[in-house]
Structures are given as C-alpha cells and as structure tokens.
Image 1 (cartoon, each protein chain N blue to C red):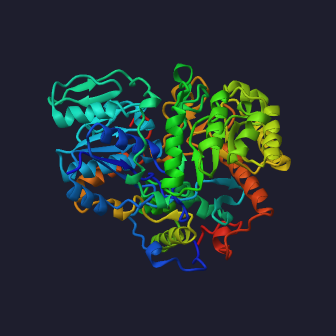
Image 2 (cartoon, rainbow over the protein chains, first blue to last red):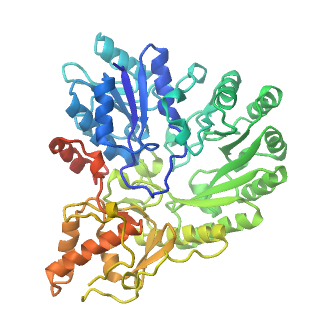
Length: 453
Length: 131
C-alpha cells in the first residue's frame, strides 16, 4: 500500500508526434520528498513524459492501493485532471483526491465536483500537503489548514488561509527524482537554486502582493544537489529552473566560486533578466560552465514594456547579446503578444526587433501568446485591461492559441500576427522558407471553393 | 465537395466515426483570402474555404456529426451522403497530415466502465472560465 500517488495529468489537447517532455516535474518530486521526510510513502506518475492510459492507471491503483491521490494542475491539463479524479473515485471512492498546482491555486475550489475532489492545496505545498495527508491518514480534529480547502468527515468544507506561508528554502528536501522516468526528459538535469523572482509582471501569477519574494536555497544544498546530479546521476548538462537566476548578484558570484572550487565538471544553462547581467558576472558564469542563457524580453516596444511592468530597457537587451557573446554564452530571447496596449504596429515593431537580435548574434528568439492564465493580472483584471476572454475550455489556454481579444486586436488579428511572427522566426532558423507539407493536396489547398461538389 | 487526399493515412489515424470528437494538433493558423493557412510541422498548409470552414468547426468539443450537420446547413444542395463522406475524408486527411487527431480524448484515456467517466469528460472538456 502506498500513502500517496502523485500524478501529473496529461495536457487536455493533443501534442505533435515528436513532442517529448522537456523537464521533470520538480514540484511533484519536491512534494514526494516532503512526504517521505514526514514518513509517508509516495509514488509519481508523469503523464507528460509517458502516455496516459486509463488501464495503466487502474493497474497502479490496484497494485499500489494509494490512500491519497494528488493531481498537479496547470490550466491546460485541468480537464484531464478531472477525468482522472473521476476514474480514481470510480475505482475506489475511499481514496482521497487532492488537486494542487498553479491552476487550482487561483480558481474557486467550490466549483470543483464535490464527488471527485476532496481537497485543493494552493501555492507551495511541501508543508500544507503533509498536514493534509497526516489529517487524512491519522485522523484527528478537522481543522482549517493554511493553503488548503478540504472537505471534513461530515462533508463540511474547511477553508484555510488562502495560501500557506512561503516554504523556507532551507527546509526543502532533495527532490525525489528516483520516482521519475528521468531518462525520458530532454533536459533531465534540472534543479532550483532559488524560488520566486521579486517582480510582478502582469502576465505572471507572481504579480500579487508586489511579486513573489526571492528565496534562495542555501548554497551548500544547491552544491550537494548539483553533485548528486552530475556525479551521481551522470548529467553532464544542467539547467537552473530559477525564475531569475542572477537576481542576487553577490550570491550568483558566490555560487560561481563554489562551482570553481568544488564543483564537478559540467555545463549549465539558466534563465534570467537582461537588467541582471553584466560583463564581470557573465565572465564568471561562463568560466564555471554556463553555456546558455534565456531572457524574457516580452516586447520590442518601449511603451508596451513600460506598461506591462517589465522594467527593462531595450538597450539592455542589445547589450546582453553582446556581453554574452563575448563570453561564449549562447542566448535566447522570449517575446509575447499581444499585451493590452499592443497594436499591429507595436507587434510588428516587436517582430522586427526580435529579428534584429538574431542579426546581433542572439542564438534564438521565440514568440508566445500572452494568454491570461488564472491568477495573472491579465486574467484577474481582464476588464480593466480591456481584454475580452472568449468562451474556451481550459485545455485551450496555452501559449499558441488566442482565447482573448484586446481593445485593438480581435482573435483573427492576433492569429494572423502570431502566425507571421512564428513563421518569420522559423524561416530565419531554417535560413530559407519552409515549403508546404510534402505532396500538394490540390483540392484542399487550391484558392477556389470546392463546396459545390 | 472535398477530394481524396493524395496519401493514405496510417491505419490507426484513418479510423473515424461520426460520433468522434476531432481536435487540432497545430493551433497556429490565420485566415487568408482563399481560406486559412495552418502552420504545420513542415510549414504553412493552405486550406480552401470549405476546408477552412471544417477547420474552424474543429473545436475539440464538437463531434464529427455536428461538423457534418453544420456543413449540410451551409450546402443544402449537396447530397448528404456524399457530404458526410467528404467531411470524414477531410478529417482523415488532417490526421494523416498530423494537423489534427480524429478523436479526442483518446480512447485509451477512458476506462472500461465509461458512463460516469464519460460524464466527467463531457463536463471537463470545453469548460473554461468558472469551471
């Protein structure tokens, strides 16, 4: 018997054939480790990395007999999470089902089906989930738990404080990667040096309360985990999954020193902001294995950048390309569209700017649609921003599908501009225009209308 | 109405019934004067007006039968049996081109005792804000 089975439900939409999960779900691995440290056994199934089949889940439920099933929800996998919750309850109504993750952290738990979902944990759950599991498995008084909404034994809904206090990063265990199919990930060697970023961009859930504070893990812990990944698990290439890896410059330099003095040989990459790098810092990072950095730029229009709260200037972006190139660090830059004040003109300016970055030496640029996910300011204050959220399933909330329109751009216009940007970037990447799919299907692709039979 | 695709799809992809719910795999597309253009795995794929109408009706919640019914309303003079066959064939073409799948969620997602779970599926997919 297993105390807790933690699942990452599959996306609620089909992925292309060549899709492979990029990174392990460290959040679930942290939760499994926290449960383990509290004396509870846990298993993980990642259905982004391995195909979901109901029959396989039935087998796991029958053989492992979990007492609690936890489902990690991102907006796009919410339908699959509810499907799995229903399957679990159908198999054994006595199994407690709890949902966690960003989606349910910012949506109303009272709207979830009461017959399949017993609880919701909001925000970081290493502490609150352990409290909930203990309450469920060991009994005791049904009391509110911070960050948890759950149904008491009498069916009454107990609502704790909205979110548990941020977890002390020094208390975080080593993620239970041994419970994950590590060989299947394209970038398996992922780790976190810190949580939070201290910023409050309108397209991110961290905008509440002035931004999620930066909370760094002790460097001893980071180094120990890094050594485990490199020397223990054999990863030669690591990726720091931090929101802003260089947010604390002095600490980043300390980490570089530790890597130089005692780190195993490895290369690594990270994501950060253009206003948080400088030549000395990048040189230090490159000297200890940093080979790639990813930056969020979001817009190539200064006015739009100012209004989304990004707090960077375009000259900083250009300088980051040159600085990184001098150190031999490969750089990629992410853009989003449309923001509330974007027009066709500002988006074309952004696309021109992105392509110019490639001319300047950036290794890659990419575009995403600025989808208003629940919890972001764009979602919570959609009307104030002039956004219209159209009728769409949660599975349609992803970065390549406009579920909204703005004051300036309807969905067709957003699609057209996104298509243009995506194609332009793909063409630059291929260095010539990709042709149509092999074999022209004339009758579908002709300019005439064949409807008349 | 619509023609036969040039290449046959793999056997597992061409199987579609009117009750199946198709869904787009590639979601980057735009309207053009001649229909729509979908950014697929090998580049832009232009679709004419009729194909574009079907493409837009593929919303992941509407079964093939509803797509057929919508097309029948658009083209009342077309023989219903021929129209049905053409729509299903076009959906097979999209699947063979990897632009869409013919049924979603996949059959493997549904357990052996489907009634209650089917209800959950109907309630979950397509349920967005507020759900």
